[in-house]
Amino acid sequence: MIEVVQLNKDDVFVVNHLAHEIWPHTYGEILSKDQLDYMLEWLYNINTLQEKVQIGHLFYLLKENGVAKGYMALEPNYPDAGFLRIHNLYVSPERQGKGMGRTLLNHAIDTAFDLDLNILHLNVNRFNKSKEFYEHVGFKVTGEEDIDIGKGYLMEDFIMELELLK
Image (cartoon, rainbow, N blue to C red):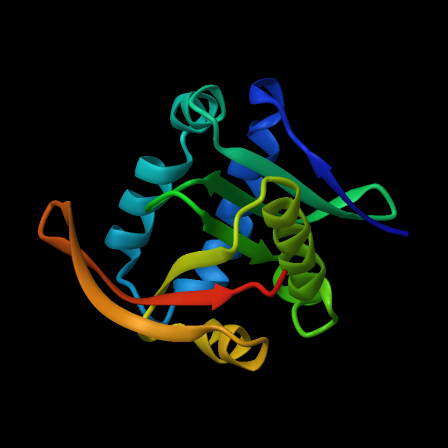
């Protein structure tokens, strides 16, 4: 059985664990080990995750037969009113290509409708093959940005959007 469940601030340790499992597979050929370690600590330490929940980010786990296999983080009205930002959408390597990402994306679409938001918005690393997934489901590249994250590292991203029909 596949289910998507929302997390509270006391459950974010599961996201931390999954990120450390998934990111080396996803970014191992794109980022140096030092940058990967830096970004995992910067984005996924428990205090940061709990703070994000407290300021309104919505975290979800994708579970298969009760076992966490993916996660997603959403932020309503970012970068502007009417938008739902997908900050994270990741699936365990062994479950990729099996419809799990689509399940999380469908949940994001449902959340957008529930919140009366009409555009999904995300950034994806310009060298990440998941860009093809997003294009396949209808996202369009609307721009590019290089984000200085410190220690001389950049996030080199495409900005992508999906306009939802109401």
